[in-house]
Length: 523
Image (cartoon, rainbow, N blue to C red; front, side, top):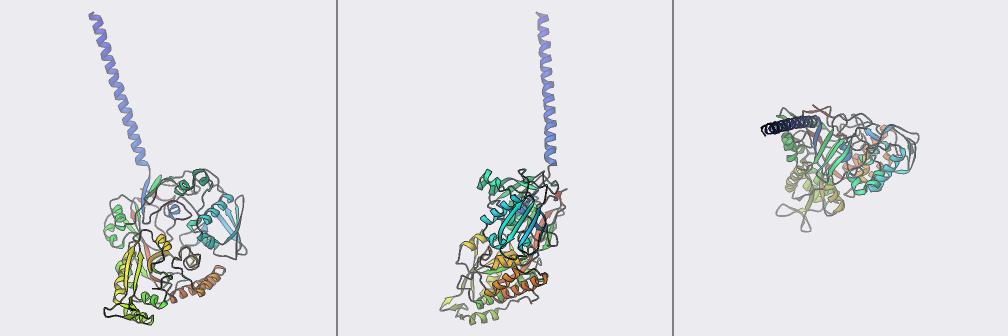
């Protein structure tokens, strides 16, 4: 019995010991595995960005987010000097500005592994025109033929501006077969492009998560993933940068720069851009259909104060649609604030000043509705400044903040004027802005501007090849726009971007198209 007892005890001890050792071994293995997992997670390169505009979907043919997020690419692009260069198209040629031949690069695949060829490009351009009717007018395509890696585009008339129009992010190339397989809604939220990053997860109007595409044709992306958040509140964006929740933040408020620059881990880039902030007039409104009224309002726009007091020096006062530093910019003197002359012009338009100092016609006060939006923090401030100076001339301006200015202005006709911002020469040429902002089919012509003399100049510009002649015509168009006060141009703003110093091999560019690139890296 004793022998049996000790044998059983020894076996029990041995069993317990083995169990403890096994448990310890498992614990050791788990610990090592966990450490490796944590190390792998730590080594994964990730970047967080914040854009100032919401994105309801990721359809590249109706929005710019896909190209900015590195998901899609266009046939042609702009280089750092705003000159056009090949991208998905290696080179292109034409003999008559009507028949264009584009050589599509070999060795490129979409995110689903499908080879990029001319037929896929043709199908993508056809889709872009189908879902974005403004492209039909800007591309002027009569027909397309695809054979292997060669795409031939025939335009409806001689059209030397076609290469510039193919830089447009709305012409991003996607594999349209993906739409058939995924369904329209799913495809609009995760388009199958050729860029260095592919959509991992998209949340409407909140954020998009992207991961690197290992098969990217121009070289393996340096980072593994990125989160791009959308937030229209400038203060929230600035705080996210200061708290290190975001690495790159676009459109910082000028008044918040000083605090950010005091942080040794952060920096601010203020880059002269190709954009103009301006007042857009609704020519459908009887209140501003008279050019004398628009001339008066133009004199009530204090451009110097906007540049100095609102933009804190991160802008230049504007004298027309195009920056005067550009070859086709005007040499005109910047219009100064002049309340008395504005009142005189209103009198010429039939308004009289009543006992309360208000301008009225037929006992009806001149009261205007001004639309603005906060995605660009300076625009509501410009609206308030104009409101204040207009009051000195007896004009009441009621400011209305909207969430999506483009949609509101396009769907409503009862507004009078709006603060707006647009790249007026995003492709080193003024024709894009002139065609989209002033022609009948232009996507940006929400004010229904129609100036016969301007239309003729734009029409001639669209068929002119000679560079000097194009510059001359663009200046003529700008002069007509100013004389008719189709818009009131306020300032040429800098692009203000906050950057964490961990970001390397990256800087903001003037065209604002190519933001998340395959060369961007982190320390």
